[in-house]
Length: 117
Length: 113
Image (cartoon, rainbow over all chains, first blue to last red; front, side):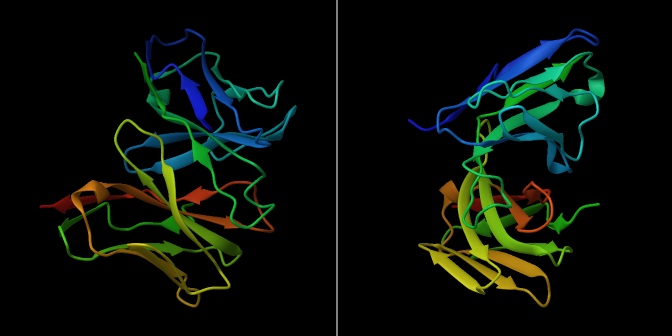
């Protein structure tokens, strides 16, 4: 089954304790992206990757890191989490970047609810 | 600066009636628009899309209308069903600028029996 898998689904942590949210897709997609969803703010892009070893900042990258060492995986790293990073996080992927082709659709994971105390 | 705006945070409609969800955008470079649907505890899923060369696209009970001159699109659901209750996100992309889908804040639709 084609899917984007995020882990964990729920995570409670404390300020300053490094954490990683994993994301994996099995569709051989080139483009992967991380979004956060906050009440009243919708979905905001954190980082994206156009292919292996190619990553770039989205709209709200501060406090986050990513890596793309393999095509299928795109982990989100919070080196020193703070309470303002409490949010619902979504990983997404598509075959190409949204710019490259018409009819391009993003496939989303089920989300990771992060609480930073 | 929000380039895709959904000004109605919520909408309540009776089962069987039409639901109309609205979306406005500011970037004239946007050329492809999508609607995503999100249930609680799930990720958004693609619903329907429209290219800027069209003004209407239909898929079963869902129709999206695009008014380029007004920079406005709308999603019509007819007839509405309780299972349509979800948050709907409007998204847009440019073929020449940026590498992201730009999302609106979402509209929470409640369809009551």
